[in-house]
Image (tube, rainbow, N blue to C red; front, side, top):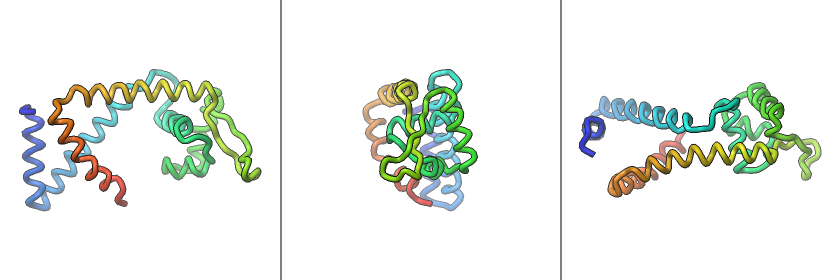
Amino acid sequence: MGDGASVDAEAVAAEAGVTEAGIGALGAELRTLVSALYRRYRSHRPPGELGDAATSVLLRLQKKGPQTLTALCEHAGVSLGSMSQTIRRLEELHYVDRSKDPADGRRVLLSATDTGATVAADVRARMEGWFDGQLAALEPDERTRLAAVIPILRKLAAND
């Protein structure tokens, strides 16, 4: 690596193992980098009428299949009213359909339409293509070191 950013990251990491202040510095550095990486990832979705919430819902429906409104709310961590607005927008665009749950006719399932699934696949391909390209541009030893951190990041993501 050898650039200024990596030296700073190494200094933060070295300090973090020693003091409480270092833990705070490590946390600040990780939050900043994760946020910046996520912003860059999101910026590679196709231009259009879908915001972050609608894009996220459409991607989930395309990947996981039909979902209830409640399940989508729980996954996104948003209110029923907020998710209802997002779903209405997706329905206006003909990206999402509602249907009765065959297992329980009282429940309504939301599904990506064929058009919605095509849009979601395009969004996913563009965003993942950019990210995979970033990983491919790393040196082999950098990819190895990054892969070694994945279990730690999973542990952080799983903790409440």
